[in-house]
Length: 250
Length: 299
Ligand SMILES: Cc1cc2nc3c(=O)[nH]c(=O)nc-3n(C[C@H](O)[C@H](O)[C@H](O)COP(=O)(O)OP(=O)(O)OC[C@H]3O[C@@H](n4cnc5c(N)ncnc54)[C@H](O)[C@@H]3O)c2cc1C
Ligand SMILES: Nc1ncnc2c1ncn2[C@@H]1O[C@H](COP(=O)(O)O)[C@@H](O)[C@H]1O
Image (cartoon, rainbow over all chains, first blue to last red):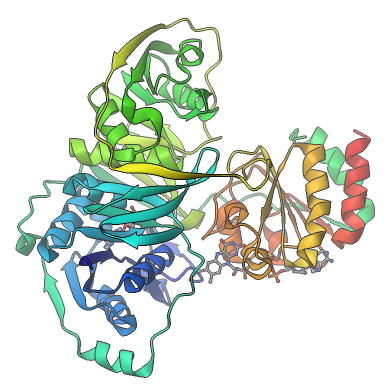
């Protein structure tokens, strides 16, 4: 069994309202923070492999709670690289930090989400793989085998395909068919006592240079003009007429 | 100077490639992985050079190998498609060059770009450096016209692959993919049962549309996750999205609210889906779909 590092990001719960105040998303207005949904599948896949699992997050202090949640379902080691405001980092810096963290754990297998629910980017898994010189498979919805030869199901141009990859490798997970395990009382109690290895980027000893992109502002999406609403199936032909004449889409 | 990484589809170009060239605004070099689509790319206006990159690694997709083989050939700003493969290549290329990648860009003005975040619940505007790699959201930028006649150079360039394909599984149906289609018609729990999706398929055939679904029916009726639209499914932005028997939960809206036009058919006049619909029809699908089918045949 290989040691596995799982990259977990804490994000506003998908049900949380995203409020922009001034020129930034107002984090104070987020009522619930959760583990990013695809990361839950990455963690579940790691738990299914068994062995030593290090849950790694990079983010502000509040992210500790998510690491404890990961311990409650079975993550064996917890690692927190404290960065107060992730929006000050570019994709290359995030990949450098997380790759250095993975190297520190000694794990040769890295599981992560296909994209985070806040950035929606999908840059980190392949970026970390590049920094580590590893193979990478993204959008994985089924995984079998072990580090000596994983078989991963991913979409292909003509449908789906099963590809083999072996350690060192990064697997970025899509939603999977498996149920996510829920913590039990014992798990929750144990997790509260679990130590979190906390460090700064400097402690990691990785030079991340300076960001090459800067965030100017965040804004609410453009409001759509109010739509037209019709009652009853009789209106269908009117709408079809409008789709042709007004919208010109059919 | 801009380098476009062509998105290929089979032996040809995926339509998004012409949009990347359009966004480049002229003097684009197009890299064609595996040589696919090179002559098509050469015929796009605004393309000054096509490099047909041939190498063993291009026989199946391996993001690391593709990025490494293509990476040495780029000059200036690099643009790729915000598709699964495009994002992976761009991420690896950026990490290897030690530069940033900004994914899913929906507008570019000089070095200022914007992109949706939080599944479209907000937009961010970013100032990028000249060497930042960008992936562009399909169907957002105007495609370059034909009429070009760029030279095609062939370069042999490969790299070590870390993955190998063991099994190919054909698509369960020949239906269009929701992320590629210009029109998507999706059904939700209001359709009553999986069997009733045949009514949606019939309309989809009339329109040349793809069929999508909400998560409720994917999970509960065992439909393929590949057609799920939303936060944990696909993000689509077709010209026309028709939601039938879908309530419009925030996680569903996350995947489709950027569609150009949205039609909602729902029997509940207060369903949240009407909040994003350009054209809302308060009716049951049992009544509305036959009427829709008739109206379409009469066009
Ligand atoms: C983390 C997370 C991720 C999620 N990701 C997604 C996602 O990717 N995609 C997604 O879709 N959901 C997602 N969801 C689920 C989402 O919250 C909703 O539960 C789901 O979208 C509801 O599906 P629905 O609209 O089909 O069903 P319902 O909410 O049950 O709505 C059914 C609708 O059909 C209407 N109706 C009933 N009968 C008829 C009739 N005869 N004719 C016309 N209308 C009728 C009803 O008025 C109702 O509005 C996610 C949830 C979570 C927590
Ligand atoms: N700050 C972070 N800390 C830990 N993991 C992260 C972080 N950012 C991204 N990841 C991982 O990388 C995946 C893709 O993130 P992104 O590239 O931002 O879409 C996420 O689903 C996580 O698994």
